[in-house]
Amino acid sequence: MSHYHVIPVMQQVCNSFQTISSHQVSYRYMENKSLKYHFHMFHCDSHSNSASNLLNLSFSRGGLFPALLSLFLVMMSGALLASENPRDTVVYLGTNGRLVPEEGALFKKEVVTTKMNKKEEISWKKVNGRWEKTATLKIRVLKGDTWELRQGAGRKEGVLLRQYLPAGEGKWQFLEQVGGKLIRKGFTLSRFPLLLDGEVTDYYPNGKTRSVAQYRRNELEGNFNWLENGSKYIDSVFYSVDEEPMLTGGNLFLHQYMKNALEKSGLDLTVLTGNMVLGFVVMETGDLAGVRVIEGFNPRLNEVAVAALQNLSLQWNPAHLDGRPVRYLQLFPINFIYKEANFQSLDFDGWMIHYNKY
Image (cartoon, rainbow, N blue to C red):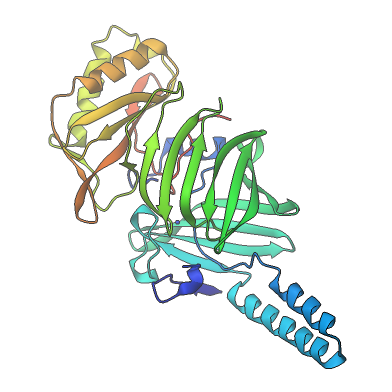
C-alpha cells in the first residue's frame, strides 16, 4: 500500500466537515440520506494521449526500428504511470482539508481497488490516538469516465453519479448528480479521492446555488453562500478550524438556556418526536449571526428555537485557523426522543455537508 504525503517538493501533486464536534451520535443517519464528499486526496492519472501520439508519429516517419523504439517507450511510460498510480492509496489530512504527513494527521482516506472497475473509498478519523472508520463509499464505473458512488444500505442508501472531464493543467472537472439533479461541480487534481483545486459550486435540490467556493490543493480559501430561497447568506465561512469557537458560558450553559426557552414557549414538548438542526455563524468578532433551521419538523418549534438563539446575549470566543480568527459555521442539533429534548453533538467526516434529502 502506498502512502502519499503531499509536500511542496512533490510536484506530482500536479503543481481532503466540517468537524463541528468530536462526538458521533444519533444524527449519524444523515450521512446515509445524502452522500458527503469531503476529504479529497491525491493520485496522478494522465489526461493526455501523448503516448499514442508518439507511436503514430514514429510510424509516419517510416522504418521498423523507430516504431519498435516508440513501442518500448510507450510500455516504459505505462510502467512508470502504474508505479505512480497504485491500486491502493492512503492520504492524510489535517484541519481545513490540508494535506499533511501521517504523524500530524487527524483524518485519512484510503482508496482500495476491490475488483476490476470497482473501488472502495474508506474514511478514517483519529480518536484518542487510534484510527476509527467513519464511512465507506463503494465505487464502480458505469461507462466512460462516469462512476457510481454508494454509501449506506437498504432504504438509507445514498447513490451519487460522478463524471470526470479532462480540464488541462493536470486537473479534471467533475460533475455530481443525485436523482438526475446536479448537486456539485468543480475541479480536482485527483479522481479518487477528490483533491479540490479551483472553483467548486454546490446546488440545492431546487437548482439554486448553495455556495461557490475557492480551493487550493484541497484547502478552502473562501466562499460565497446563499440560502435555498436564493437570498444571500454569510460569506467566507469555514467549517474546519484549529480552534473551535467557545461560548463564554460554556456549552452546558447553551444547552440549559435552550431547554428553558423551549419549556417556556408554551409548546407541548411531550408530543414532539423528531430531530432538528440549527445552524449559525460565529463571526470573527465573536458575534453570532445567520441563525437558521437546517432541518426541522415543526414550524412553531422552528420559530421558538431561532428566536432563542438570536436573543442569546453572551459573547463567543471566535474560531481560529492558522493563528487568525475566522467565521465558523456552528451546528446545534436537538433530538426530541422519548418525550424529552435530547441535545446531541454532530460529527462530520469532511468539509462538505449536504443536509438536504434528495
